[in-house]
Image (cartoon, rainbow, N blue to C red; front, side):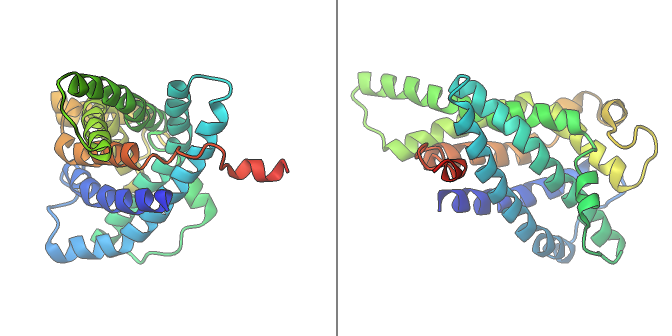
Length: 261
């Protein structure tokens, strides 16, 4: 249930916070969305994003708890989010961008093949790995540390705060900080997704340096903070929610252990 709550809620937030960012980094190719167009895109994209987020957190939990035996919990959290998040987020974001352009241009949407889904991993792969490791992964590592320090200070002053509220608040603050530090990685990844969606040949299929150069050329210094308010809502909210529900609360419940019996 915790994975379902996290995946569903964060999937909805992701779609609604990312769509304006896609428009902003479209370099004029996509105008401001009308309410009708917004609704069409949301109805088509949101179920797909929610299911993928649910799967992402399930796989990430398995990997993180398995790696806890060999490396520190903080490192395993960041590495698990980097590895698993890169796979899922690359597909989610690049599919979202592609779907938005298809709906905007009125192109019929055939069902994506496995090869097309695999192609969706490539644009901005390097930037996506850094973004996932240090934004969500870093936020989930930092959240419990901030919570412990805050709780110590509150207890020293005789202030009582609901544990779940404190978990969410400290997670939200941590996520807001890690989101800002990784905003340039996120914007560069969006540019890479756009370049792939419109079929640009330069830098294909990964667009690693091409997307960085294009992003800085188009946004200048704003590359480091453009789209931050929308993404902050997603990352800070997601870190706060996951810090509160604690999807790692039963480390004894692992799918992979079922095969050891």
